[in-house]
Length: 86
Length: 272
Image 1: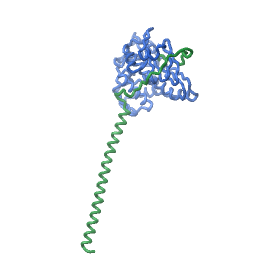
Image 2 (image 1 turned 45 degrees about the vertical axis):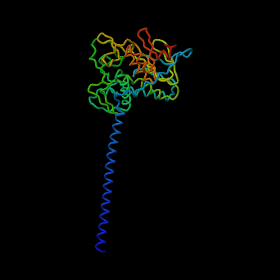
Image 3 (image 1 turned 30 degrees about the horizontal axis):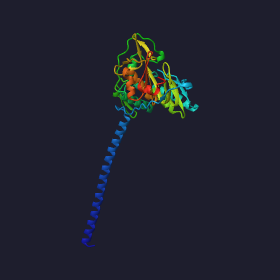
Image 4 (image 1 turned 90 degrees about the horizontal axis):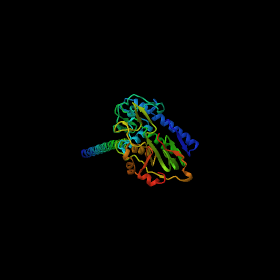
């Protein structure tokens, strides 16, 4: 092997090492960014879930429903149940 | 709970499940059982406590009701009702010449419930009876599959339609949902020479001064009716219009006088 060929081989190896390091760096950066978002999302979701399950000032969640009654008449007017003060 | 429970339309198995439900809820929410979760929580000096899923669910409903009624139906009035003299099972209550204890206004906004973690200021005494009985009635009805009704202590939930007797006189047909009556005619006693009752005005921390003796409301659920009936009672003259603003039928009694709101008259002109 000539000295030029050896130098080219050393350069090629250096490039591979540099490329691998860059890829590793990129991957590390990618994981760090993704981890940050997940943590933020986790924080967001936990705070969301805690606020949704933490009942505070909003009265919007209490539902009275609607009245569904009719006059009773004739033979069906004998009460089956009784409402009273308890 | 010290109340009579009536069930119609349930199978034998469903009836057993309903009986178990009321037993369990009494073990959790009774103010007069020292071992109940409510009693143990009220004795616990910790600022933050872990409550059971059932307790958390009921408290969540109670807090929603407090928000919806602008604090009229408040789960933090345990100290106030005890100060008025209702500090033991009603069957054991007698006249007491001692003056009532100091008033204790409601403070529902000071509670923080996150999942099963509850934080409350020191000295807070919870009383969830503003919603528990009616919630239990709704839950019991859900244990049945067919047309049925469940009645407990005057709170009624119906599926499939039932004729319901009203306080004093009259009947109506409850097609679905619930009906409840709130008032001062039954749970009243004398303390310090004055008549007391169990419906505390959270604004004053004292038994409410209302022109009504009883208020009956029909709503989409028993707990909805119960909360609305209490609010209607506490609002006194403003009760009928408050219910009308929410599309709820209400019947108000003061002695022999019966007043019905617009929603009631609209739906029940023959039964009012």
